[in-house]
Length: 612
Image (cartoon, rainbow, N blue to C red; front, side, top):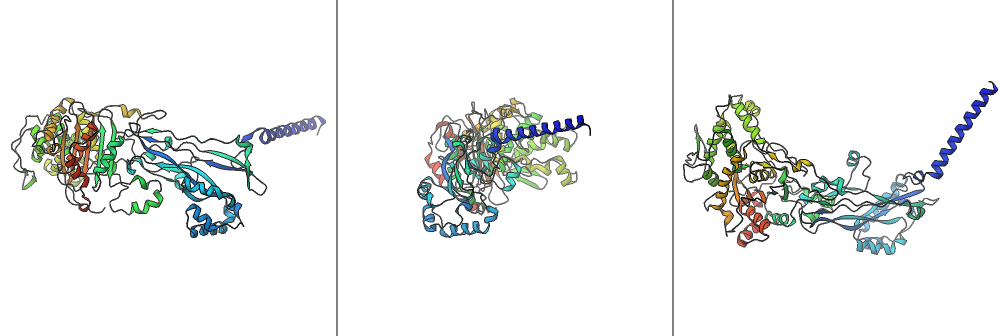
């Protein structure tokens, strides 16, 4: 090797060494992030949990706030070999002595694996209990308290609406890599999961130095490198807390749902599923899970958005509007009803009322036969070439009302429901079917399935004279935006001019004194101008379901509502008075029919409902 080559090699080695030394100096001396790395064994990071964002109603009332509790943490290695006063510890923390012994047996058994890892010794210790423990904590090396916030519920807005939070598991952490760690909590249902990203906040930490024996010493750099937790964003909902709470009282001891919507915005004013989860069971959901899950009426099942029910007679409004649009029906069209609709040797029954009758009177009396004729004419419309083509057109128009699909609400677990297709009936009847084969669809029975949210949206659509905003639960607020789709009008395929013809019948159904919804005016309340339609939906599990949709006031709608009561019988028996009380409560702030209210509040239909 020549001297020149040797010099170059030597120069290269020196240069490399200098670069390496400079890099090491930068990492070890200048760059603090390596010193304060969470993996640095000389450091101990104590998590600071952020306060979860507050959930408010539309008027600024707190639906879900925060209260302070403490988790008692233990580092088993720090207390190894130390004898504790187990009885004192148990009395102070309100724990069972046997539980404490079991925990220490566990720490001893797995001491090699656990090492210096912090463990949760006691969860959700109340502040007054923690203060007592803080006074004697010096006797218990290795123990420390970590402040957490848990939910508080000033108003009972219902656990199914708000949802619950629980500790994340391995599966949840794998689905959200880098965000959650063991001991973290996350929303699992309701608004809590729908708005988890906004509500959760960002964790902080305090950094402590470890000594040579790994015991925790003073704060690192007097806390200069600590990171403050960032609280979650507050969320404003569309819910009216008073209406929500009142609706829950009305639905007690009944199975079903209520949904109320502001027609002009699509904002959900109340969303009630009964029986539901009491908010008092949410904060310790794990401990209460067995009680809730073993309830034969399935309180965790949110019927408002996830139960597929036959809509019953409220669906006559949809068929009537389609008949008007397709030109097979006019408001003056009259049909006879001889206690039902006869086809072949079969009869689809109806209650007694005057006959023949026009469209307005058919809505007012909820005539089954009338809508059998309307539906038959839709499926025999000569402008289409086949039953399949006519049915596909009907199906398309029904979908334009939001049925047979998820509406796109921001509330989780929404069900699409079901509107049958011509392909379904081709398969069932081997392509040999007609209007009579599916005549039950004329009155909202048969294969039609929808949620209370769907039929509340129908009420809002009619209130708006032909369009709806996608129902949603969250309002735009400071730092929280909502999807632009919630501001868009969704028009049906029925011309807006036809809706006023339907509304006349809905108004008479409630206000004429002889309509199917006339009991809404027991103890008459003037000025509400409710327009409604009853439904009595067949139920293979027992008595018919009681259904009612309405909106009010007639000419300037502020609220549209659907009430669905399982095994409630006629729509006018339970659903009508319940809906009318909700409307009165929302529009006037008071109830002027105490006897009706008393009957509903004391009514118990649970004995009629077969366990699921």
